[in-house]
Length: 362
Image (cartoon, rainbow, N blue to C red):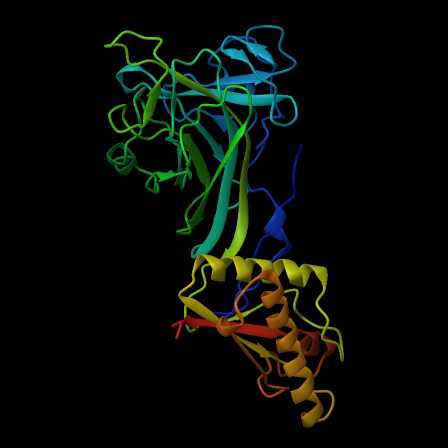
């Protein structure tokens, strides 16, 4: 199962465009479907799961329906669980005595772009034989794959001592303990890339003392217990640039046909990202500007460009953005991106731009 990925290139220093890569998963084999060998022995992730490996001495496991051993699906040495999707998943300890930890890592299909936003998500399920549950699972991004000689947790201090660049651990969103042993639980986090991230590491980066742990009461007072989780459906999706106030951005896929101002389906996807960003940042408002090519009279182009800006504004309002956070205007053909008199240049100029600025609710 191989995916093709489309790179996203900046238009200029002050304009960024969206790409059809919006819906592409940047994690190789995120569903753990591809394998080198059908699993037979435990502690087998490095050998059996394609693209995935363990960055430490922790002995992470790989499970697949093809296995007739204790690494099968749904029945295995940690209990019973169907795959979230397909036929495979990974298994690892997020909590164990003496801060023992297991991690998984994977090289991404492309380097993340500095200043751009991404959404990381995964599904996890607590194994039936676990003594307790945690509410701590995080992600670290690195420039190169990690190989660290330890079985303990990867603290930020440990990560800062390695040669390759790494981010600090970022926690997935949690509304409670991940204690469901029957169903898959979905977690996610948003992040802004620093521009060197080629590799993803998943696990619990906290010590036992720093981990939120729910003991099911199976152990003695001095026994720290175990929390073993199945992981599946790891997805990293490109969201768009980290919009900076007072900077102009061109919306790709909001390039209009000649003499038209209707939105195409791809344009609506781009606007959905802008809307979601504004919802997450209520201190911002958006100013929309419409533009045309050089064909037609100045008066007509002023009207047409205003209609294009109005079309975008009305779509944001339909999505749920308050009217008081939106302004729009048309500039006709007065501010072209490309001044050459070609069809390609004219299509580029038939566009909509936006600027986000501080919003004060009066």
